[in-house]
Length: 202
Ligand SMILES: C[S@@+](CC[C@H](N)C(=O)[O-])C[C@H]1O[C@@H](n2cnc3c(N)ncnc32)[C@H](O)[C@@H]1O
Image (cartoon, rainbow, N blue to C red; front, top):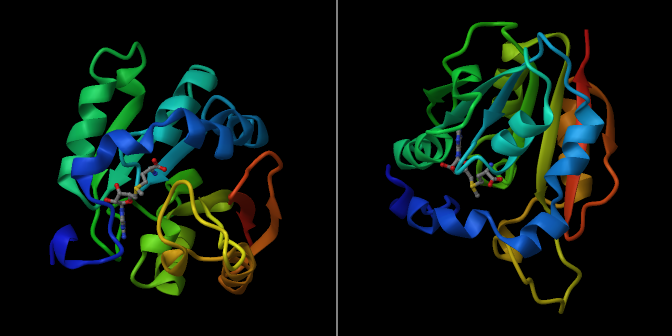
């Protein structure tokens, strides 16, 4: 099934919309970088990396020795990211990997931090995908989920997916806790959206 058949999938033709000054205010990548405080040796997978909104910001903010996987199920999105990274001085620290709807082809325990930005609401099977994320993570590894929050009734969205496609903050918190992640806590500074960072429970 292509993205055109699936009402909840982002259309790669709109990739440019993912990088917007208003979005940078609502979902500030610098806040995530500060919260994660990546250290040399950390292996980061940005799953549903799209045009690299999170990946490129984290790459720019991280010390040498932090390595990244850009993972996406949509080849057209990986192509956009590859193009945006073309002349990046740290291009060699990024590997691009195509995944499928339910599986990420990375080894067990091979990732220290998983970032999922504006993709949680697109997943066909969120509990199943969280099991897959746990499998990838090393002991004590961290998961950051950033997504658009549900809006109060009557409030019009300015950005992001329609309200009825969103996963509210409370739902994400509950699902991530139920999937054996601990200490799930929101990072400050996000508007109309949330950024949850949790740790893989032993
Ligand atoms: C709305 S875009 C967000 C892209 C980027 N993370 C950002 O925040 O700008 C969602 C991305 O997730 C990808 N995606 C959707 N479902 C996926 C899945 N099950 N596994 C991997 N990627 C997925 C889409 O192809 C798209 O690139």
